[in-house]
Structure formats: structure tokens, C-alpha cells
Image (tube, rainbow, N blue to C red; front, side, top):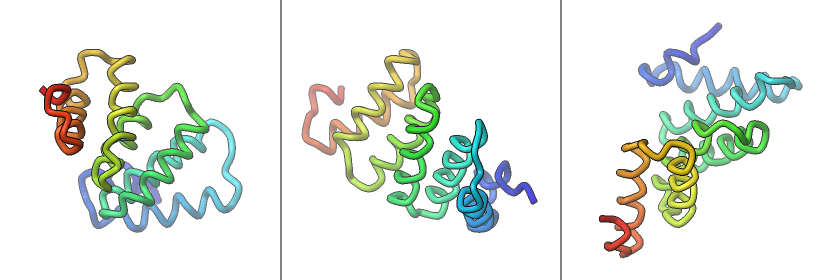
Length: 123
């Protein structure tokens, strides 16, 4: 039943995980598990290459659990994948305010700046 932990490393489980998690949301899942449920829908969707769907799910996770920086970081990566670079920069910057030593966020934010032609900020 619990494919979600394998979803990040085994793409074959992502579709099933996303379907099961969406089913849980549609069935009325509530409480502290709901933000994580949307987060895992987002991860599964991203792993399937469905980045816009991932953005939607991760945005829901952020609205329900605004204190979780991991939701913001994952959404930023998906925003970058769909070419929404300004929004990705905003999210990566939010991650960096919380975790100023996050090299991955700096690296990806630099690429987002580069895509917008903002080379000085990218450096």
C-alpha cells in the first residue's frame, strides 16, 4: 500500500502513488497528513514529468503547511522546469532565507536568473 517512499527512486511506483494519494484527498483526508499528501502528489507528478500538476499539488501543500520549506523548494524546481523562472527565483530565495547555506537552491536560482538573462545575479 505504501509506495510513496519508493516513488523518488523507482519511477514505476509514481503513477500508483499519485493515484492513491489523490484518492485519499478526494475521500476527505484531513489533519496534519494533508499537506504531506499534496507534497507527495507533487513529487510523484514531477517524477512522471507532469510539472504543472506538481506545481498545483505543491502549492496546495504550501497553503496547508506554510512552515515547510521543503514544499517551497520542490515547487521552485518544478516552476523552473516549466519555464516560470521569476516565480522559481522567488521560491528559491524564500528557501535561502530559511537555509542560507543551501547550495542546491543557490545553484538552481542561478540558472533561473540565467534563463531570464540576468547574468550578474546568476553569478
